[in-house]
Amino acid sequence: MIAYVDSSIVLRLTLGQAGRLREWRRIERGVVSGLVEVECLRTLDRLRIDASLTDDTVATYREAVYDLMAECNVVEPTASVLRRASQPLPTPVGTLDAIHLATALTWREQRDDDLVFATHDRALGLAARSMGFKVVGL
Image (cartoon, rainbow, N blue to C red):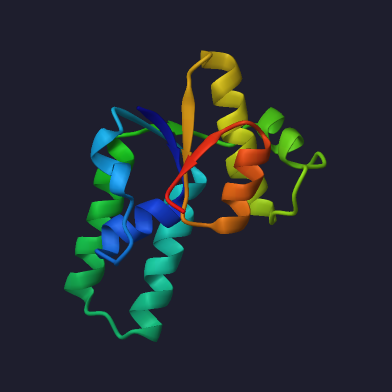
């Protein structure tokens, strides 16, 4: 399976949280936006402060994010992806989610892959479904 993976998937895997993606081992190739690194590291920084994580724990989690990103095809947000994300969508999503969706749409069109959309975010999953993606993780 080839899957677009958003930061909610990466964070649950990294943090070992309940409800991790069951299909994770079936993903042969992961596709992520460069935003995933920023979103995950910002979340870890907030957790460092809010949950009083130790420096060692934060370093371990950051390393896990970097390792996971290294295993995926990272797509940096281009001007065309950002323009696409600014266009109307069939369901309401926030800015970063629109960029994730635009990235996945662009990948699917350029590669003609049967791309699956992996997210734990219900609003983003609904938007992805409305754009013709099979969604896993909800």
